[in-house]
Length: 389
Image (cartoon, rainbow, N blue to C red):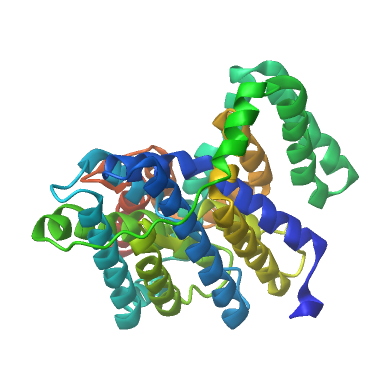
């Protein structure tokens, strides 16, 4: 394994972890608070789920030699915001997190998703990936609208780095982001003081309480949105890049990791999609067989972020989220272009691919399930109808 290690893979893994943490940690904290967690319990939940997904990803990649990245369930956290607190408070929510983790593990052990993933046409998997990436790839231009000078600094860093070499495009963008934070945002003494205070976060154990309300109102919906909104597109991203999804192993391990994190406030972990693509592209390594080190590096960084969850949350909060997303979008430009090209390579599949891509990117949400699921469902239906016609 050590012979496969490369600086580019380590960098892309660290960048993926930074982006994954920075772009959605606020949603996780908000969801846990909405479920009744105190500030200390919410910080503990963030810590627990970050460490759990990091360790699980390291184990997966070491076992499979495939760049399988894990993430926390962002749609699951958003679901917690919409459902609000249970009658039994946060302890009842923790019980629901445990049940959701058990459901995820059982789904992996019986392996129905693995059979489903194998049946997804490659063009639709590529369209799903392009749709997932599209919104984030628009972020550099939203950053220009937010602040032209700050957005242009990040964009120029990406362009100049790319002139040196393709693998330096993302580091150039990250350097531009650092310059913006130091010389543009310029956090004041009050923000830095809050940052040092945030470093004191500690794990908080919550004894779970199980109830029918928790099962029906949180556990089952959390399992559903995590499967439909994260695991299905995440496995599709692997397929689009030519890697086996290892669905059974990944789902069962992420489910067990969720169960371990739940008593400390962690809600759910699952396949990553957007940050996973950062670990699978040529920027990680020209040889696809050596890119798994990017996902291992991302996992190690997540563990580190988890240990210093309070400090990490305070640091990334110093800059507007749109700037962090801009760095990620620029790093994913190549992945988006490749996915779009593959999605529309076959003329007979173009209509189905277009529906999949557009529905996924639209932000559509029905019954608490994200557009990625509905896009793949609609594109698959059109694919079947056109093939039978």
